[in-house]
Image 1 (cartoon, one colour):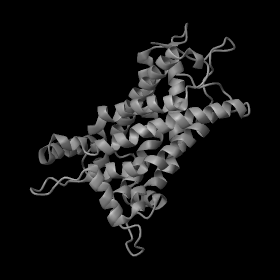
Image 2: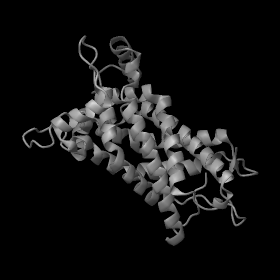
Image 3: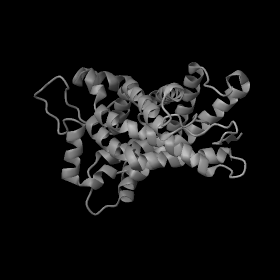
Amino acid sequence: MATKVSGGNNGQKKPTSAATNLIAGGGAGMMEALVCHPLDTIKVRMQLSKRGRVPGQAKRGFIKTGVEIVQKETALGLYKGLGAVLTGIVPKMAIRFTSFEWYKQLLANKETGVVSGQALFLAGLSAGVTEAVAVVTPMEVIKIRLQAQHHSMADPLDVPKYRNAAHALYTVVKEEGFGALYRGVSLTALRQGSNQAVNFTAYTYFKEWLYQWQPEYQGGNLPSYQTTLIGLVSGAMGPLSNAPIDTIKTRLQKMKAEEGTSALQRITKIAGEMFKQEGFHAFYKGITPRIMRVAPGQAVTFTVYEYLKEKLEKSGPSIITGGRYEE
């Protein structure tokens, strides 16, 4: 399958403007974060947990992990790190959708405007790497530092090291230097790149198939429930393909840098210790809450994005109506 990208006045759809991506993508990202962040906190706690190393110490599942967080830290504990996510979600989503559209046009056949499946995959991969370097890595470092703290949100005397996202940012930079914000950037880029490559490619194919099956929707949006369903399925594919990368990344970003060791040495050490002390299954810790968080998260993102984009393009000023986002 192949799709066509921007055209002039010949009936082809124009690429979505940066302003539309900023508003629609940011709105979709904020909704996704508010709905799915508790599952991300549970995922991080499971990935950081080293239970099971000591004989007789039972491993925690995602339900028990979530229950323990609520019991010890109140329900607000599930939203630790949300401030860092909300701060970065608007630029992250704007960069994701805008760069994907740009890379897609760049990789399209110059004569026909056709975008091959391989070009779609590369455009998604490039968009994921772009957002990882520009926004996601610093956001993840701060988020994970906040999520890793086990203090009670209900006890004012239980003061954590990092009080909020801004304080965590200040403290990390002060104690570890600006470079600490980019700890694990290679793994983050690999995770985000593979996620978006699979996600955008699968979503595009599913969407095209639905348009072929239901030609009455050509030129407009699919029903919201269909967008939600294909977003859910495509969103689940990324975590299954890169779970070990995400687990190693989480542990790396929680650590302080070791003097005299390179990033590759730290990554190799973490992976080696995990395999030796916890077994192969340790690389897939948190996979259940991650799929439960990413899959519905992508469903929410695509559904809200398509809805807001359509509203903006129908009613917004000329600066916003840059054309319809085309898969």
